[in-house]
Structures are given as C-alpha cells and as structure tokens.
Length: 250
Figure (cartoon, rainbow, N blue to C red):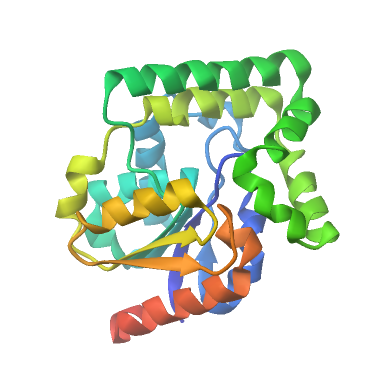
C-alpha cells in the first residue's frame, strides 16, 4: 500500500484527509501555527519546510507520494525543491509557486497583516466567519450542511494567535519564489484545480509549461478546495498516481 505525505491548507487540520484513506497510508502532520505547541512554531517559510522534512524522515525512511492542498501545496513545492529524492510523485491541489516581484510580495504582506489584525482584535470566530465568506470558497454552498459544519468545527480548534503566526511566517508574501525551480522537478507532478477555480486554473496552466513531467487535472464542478468538494474523485486520482509509479509506489 502506498504512503502519502498529506499537507493541509491554512485553517485546516489533518482530519481533512480522512475521506482519502482508501488511497493508502496517510502521513498527516500539523502545520506550524495550526495546533503544534507554540514552542514549535516556525519563524519562516523555509524553516517550516525544513521541519516538515525532518518530520517525514522520522516516519518514513523510504520515498513517499506527496499531496498538498493550497498552503500545503506551497510547502510541498518547498519539500520537492529541497529533497526531490524523498518523493515518488506529487499531487498539488490549488498550488501557487510564489510571487515574482517585490511589489506583489509587499502587497500580499499588507493583506495578510490585515487578516492578522482581524484575528488578534476580533478573535477566531469572527475571522472564521469572514474566511468562510471569501469568494474563493463560494462553490462550497452546494455541499452537505454537515460537511461544512465539520469543517467549521475543525477551524475553531485553532487559536487566533496560532493562525496569526502562520500568516506571518507562511504567508504568500513571505514565501520564496519557486517559479525558477519548477523546471528542475523531474518527477511526476499532477497539478489539481477545480473546474470553477479560475485563478488557480490559470496558474496551473502556466506551471504545466515549466514542469518537465506534469499533468493538469481538472476536478469537475469544484472550486478551490478539491479535497473537501471532490474526495472520491481525488482518491481515484491518488490511486492512479501510485499505479503509474510502478511497483515502487504500490
């Protein structure tokens, strides 16, 4: 049975991957600021990439498959860049390889700072209300009410201070620009985007031109969070990815 390193998104938890368990053994670390002790919070994006690399090495001496969603996909790119030999294949859901200009990064840091202040001044529940109303997640209104309620319960297990720290250390404005690194990633990579996630579909199409061994996979009818919106479809994609990897990935 295949082993997958699964990295959740911002405000997410490892529990978001439970519906994918048929795909194999899932290794699901908690990201910095999302439930790990404050002493383990990382102060930079690359420090979190290094921590996740150590976490994986302690649990699997052999190469694994990678699944990352949104923030998890961005951290996954960092891991692929740092230690490509540790991975058999990668499924990156809603990835962004980084911002290319100092102006874009400064603008994003300003936006993230506004989110941090919302967390720190109004609290976790008010921030969660705001976050769930973002247009990025509008397609989730079609999901079962209990699925959405479970997602909200998971979000509310965090702390305002933890998520604020995650925005500071792991935000897109403080992430390295990995665009120049894509051509060096010589392993099978599936870029997974929702059919209705226009922005990330465009990003995925651009990434496809740069990655040596990539496919663009479109989740029918889905928005940004394909893990939540199309778990059965994503499970099948994971199974196909590990079958394509041959005996080593089986």
